Image 1: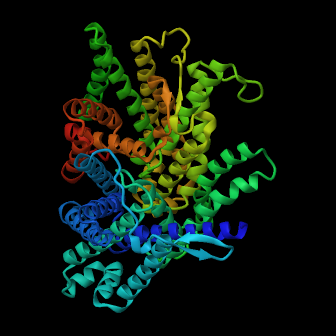
Image 2: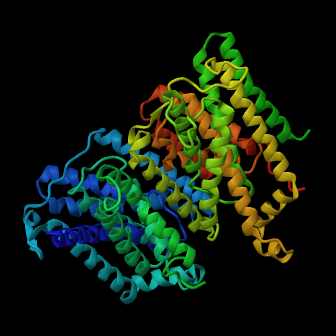
Image 3: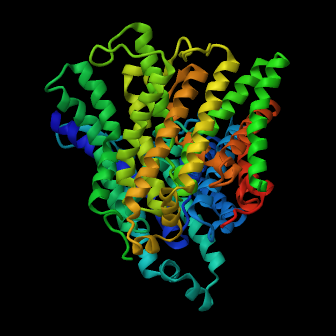
Length: 306
Length: 323
């Protein structure tokens, strides 16, 4: 039974990691191409979740909700890019941080305005509602496995997009020399809007999928955003591969730490003390891990050269 | 007297005039508002050491603000319950003792966080300071001994020898005096060789290294001083509200401190005061008009960042003179 629990927790960690990857991939893509730090990325995650929950409630279909989440987040991303973000590319990071912090206030309060303060609920689609047996005799929810699957597909898709397509070629070119690709006749403004919308859509997808596991509420994007920052700091800013490895590591360390640390502490202290101290320490674990990685490699595991 | 000095003097006088006028007009609420301005300004002056002088965009100063707050809350709780805290010491209700503990605790935290974060720079630094502050935030939430998510109440405001801190005006004077001390420190530090080296590190690291000064230790020292001052502000803030909670540690708080500096003017002596005054007024005014005040605050902030760089002191006093 203990093995089953361990496998279950490992899968939970993997699912969490995959979701963090969707967030971190967008962030790191936007940073890599435009050199922009976007604190409002968590708001786009929230937009995706709200769009999915609303459309699913109207139509009764989770799948339409999922489509709506992608569309809404991408649209919100494109609008924000055109109205605000575009003016920030040449500014220093301080201005970017501040403007995107202001955007968070606008998004959060705006969403509360539209939807009220009560959380929305999103049901798991019937197709994925079951559970599958895992080694050790336990059952694991199919939906969480599906999230892991979606994450893997997105990772492969992103890899193909960036390494095999014309758009990917432009993205890579934009990362290394933005003046040059402009001179070669690529419309950089549109390219940036597209990249921003793509990153936003990934965040929206993550929000929609997680919305069925937790409640959909204002501010849901913020804890995830900060974990996504930890992920890209560990992985190396601008690296999609780093985002994937960092996300899986953070997901596993966080989930398994919360599961194993209280148990380990219980070996030499009282159960209630072990539970509370274990929980407090486990919540710090990934930050300790981040500090360790940075002590050894200040620019992250897969930092781009230079 | 330069224009900036006149603006500074006016700001300081204005901040002092609000509670005096409010007391004369028997409006104690405005005394609290002015005290809030002074405390937030003090926290932002602390951040201004790192951000304004050193160009270190710390998005984690809520950590020091909150640690200072918890220092006040924990010491006062132990003193109230007569529970020993450590080595048989039962905490304290004396503000100077609490400030010392807040200084020490936030200083140690700043040393640890700074030592790791300053190995990196730019956007990494922003995110790492943010992440470390979140680490302490989550620790405070999941550590039940001192209230966890619910926070910790301070039953009676802590005491300062010779003053009645329960009187709003007296407490304001304490906060105002500490703000003045911090401003003097800022001015002295900025004009000292150490401050010059720090500013040089911001402007051109390579050149500083060429003259034989390593930027890392200077930045670390500035970061620690910065964290300590913000920590004292946190202790005062806890006393003002007679309450500490993890929200003092949250990244919104870090963002607010940055916002205060930007609104007022980065690197300006009295920028944080102008920023804090405007912020509290906006919060109060917009909060009175609409429940959705954060929405409009966000829009205003966006407008300031995009179109009005240099902040209020920048508008009033013109460009920084590089002499």
